[in-house]
Image (cartoon, rainbow, N blue to C red; front, side):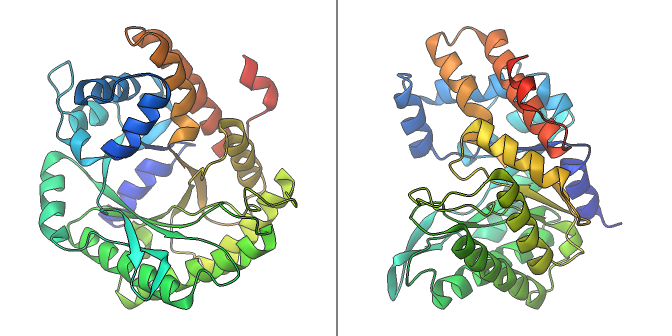
Length: 336
């Protein structure tokens, strides 16, 4: 077992999942302002530290994806944020892409940037305590998209990123997200997501990536958010597992799903059925942002001094997600 594989398994095993707390300052400002909290470095740190010092960090969270501002901050206890996370038994990680920009010659589509200077940034993040990283490629579905150009360009960038990350002895999360936006059917999502993931692995193999030392972070197979033809949770599970069985090499240790705009309960229920029906060798778990944090953020915004009570809200959501990753969640548990 390689060191990279050990890190990946530590993050994913025993129903533990990943807390995606890597929102940029711009995104975090929108979320805080939506609940009438001023977006300052102190307030952003206070909310995140509340989550990072909760009991569920020991019980449910295997890894935390940070943003550049956060990984450089010091907690109220005097520990750095990576030290605080590590003390709970979880693994600190870091988002390293610099965002999605218009793709040249296909400006309706996006290409993720951030390769320039990445090797040097990775060395800095490793010294700060990060042991895994994240890079997200985004793809929209319409009659013409995603184009072969967008699929190839983003797969190539993801593979170059992953090679640099493994060179620096960290685990790359590979996140090719086919967006829910649109009125496409679930079958169209299945077709396009399969095409996107297969191309990613073609490029990863070409770049000699150790597939046992990565984590795949894909979308679930869903109908578009504006589609009139929604599918059942069982169909989400069946189509998602079909996609992964046919697209992902068996060497990959685990899959941590993104929530992609689903509500907290939707993301939990769908993960539960996928885990319960899992007929692959892959560990199935979660890498959620809003679907882990939203209830806690709403509660905290009413009185940011109520740390323990906010942690209780977060602990409940994390516990629900971890039970779902084990296929043990039921709706009745939501009200306990």
